[in-house]
Image 1 (spheres, rainbow over the protein chains, first blue to last red):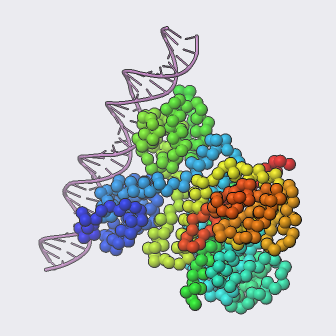
Image 2 (image 1 turned 45 degrees about the vertical axis):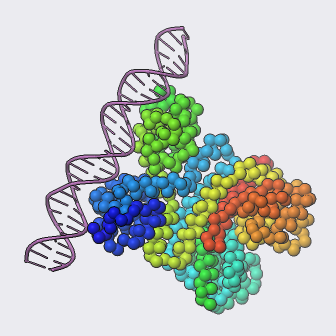
Image 3 (image 1 turned 90 degrees about the vertical axis):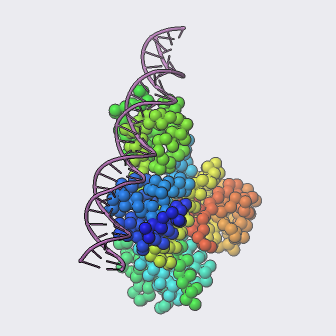
Length: 278
Length: 278
DNA sequence: GGGATCGTGGAAGATTTATTCCATTTTTCA
DNA sequence: TGAAAAATGGAATAAATCTTCCACGATCCC
C-alpha cells in the first residue's frame, strides 16, 4: 500500500496537477504501474478518446493494472480520470474544422475562409515542428551563436521575414547583430570576421546569394548555422548545424509560422545565454 | 426514407467529408434531425469526447433521434461516427501539455522548452485570431487593396517582417507593390498617389514614422488599411479599416504568428481578386 | 529458507452507453 | 377531410466498457 497512499490523497483536478503527482510518485511505482506511467506521459492526449482496454494494451499491461494505476494517482477509477481530460479538452477547443464548417455554411468564400485555412495550416506546422525538432542540433545552434562575437544574419525573399525578426529581437537584447540585405554588397564577406557566426535562412527554391555567402563563410572556417525547410538541401553541407522547419501550405501559399517560431526561440535562448555568459 | 437514402450511401471517411454530406442533405432533414445537424455544426469538437446522451441532450432531442441522424449521414450508428472523430483527434491534436511534461521530466531548461512554449503561444494566438476576426472589416480591407493602383506597405521593427512577407507575396502574384523602408525618405509621400492605397502595420509601442506616414496619406484622401495589436491605438483614427491580431506572449517575447497569418491571407485574397478583376 | 507482503493476470460482475423497436403523433397529398 | 407515409418519443434490449475480486507468483525480510 506504500505507493498508493490511499484515502488521504484526493484526485487531481487539472491535467498539470496530475502530471505533478506523477512526477512525485513515479519512482516508487511497481513495474507494471511504472509502465502505465511511462505510457501516459507519452500519450496523454489519448486518454480523452480511449478505453482502458486501449490504453492498457498500449502500455503492455492488463486492464486491471491500469485501473490500479489510476487509483494510485488518486482517482476512484479510470472514468474519473478520463472525465478530467475530457473536461479540459472541451474547454480548450481549437476547432478549425468547426469554424470552417460554419463559414462554408454561410456560403463564405472570401478572405475569412482563407484565414481559417491558413490558421489551420499554421497550427499543423507548429505541431510538426514540435514533433520533428532535433533537440541536440538546436542546442548546438544556440551554443554557436551564443559564442559568436557578432551574429550575421542572411536570408532573402520569403526568408527575409525570419531574419528581420531575429535581427530585431537580438538587437533588443543587445546582442551585436548585422543583417545582410543586399547580395552584391562587397563588404558582406569582410564584415564577417573570425570569431563571428553566420545564421543563414533559405527555403526551396534556394537563392544563390544566400547559399554562396554561407559557402564562402564556411570555407573561411567561420561557423554557419542554417535554417531551411528540408534537411538535405544545399545548406546541409555548408552549415555546421542545420535546423529544419517545414510549413504546411494552403494551395501554393504558406505562412512561415514554424520557421518564425523556431527562429524566435533561438534568438531568445541566445540572448539569455549571452547575458548569463557576461 | 427519402432523406436517409439508405444502403447506397457509404459512411464518410473524414470529418470534412462528413461536413460536405451535411451541407448536401441539411435542407431535406426533418425537424429533429435538423436540430442535430445544427448542434453538430456548432459543436463538432464535442463528438469525440461525448456520449449520444450528452449530444442529443445538447441538441434538444431524444437519443433515438440522434441515432437516426447518424444513420442519415451514412454511418451504421453513433459509434462509427464517433470513431471518425476520435481518429482525427488522435492524429492532429497537438499536445503541448504532453510535450512540456516530457521536457520537464528530462530536466530540460534550454531552447527546446522555449520552442514548446512559443509553439503553444502561437497556437493560442491563432485560435484567438479566429475568434476575434471581424469578417466585414477584412472584406473591406480586401476591397480597398484590390481596387488600389499600387499597394504601399509600411511597417518598422517588429512589423517589418509582416510587411516584408506581404510584399514578397504580392510581388509574386504580380500586384504592383512598394515597401517603404526608410522613414526619412522624402519620396515616400510622393510615391503614394491618388488611386493607390497604403497598408500600415504597427504594434504597441507604435513607431512615429509609420503613424505619421499613415496620417499624411489619410489626410490626402488616400485609403489606409491598418494592422495592429489593438483596436483603439493611434491607427484606429487614420485607417479606413483596421485589422487586429493580438499575439500571446512568452515572457516578454512574442512571435508574430497571428499577424503573419492574417497578412498572408489578405495578400492571397487580394491577389486573387485582382486576377479576377482583370 | 520460510513466512508475510506486495504485485499480477485473468475472468466474473456491475454499470454505463449504444441501439432497436414500436405505439403514438404529425405531416403529406389526393 | 381522411388515408397513407413519415417522424417522433420513450422504453426495452444489446453491447461495450469499467471495476472488482481472488488465486497465483514474485519479492522482501527476519
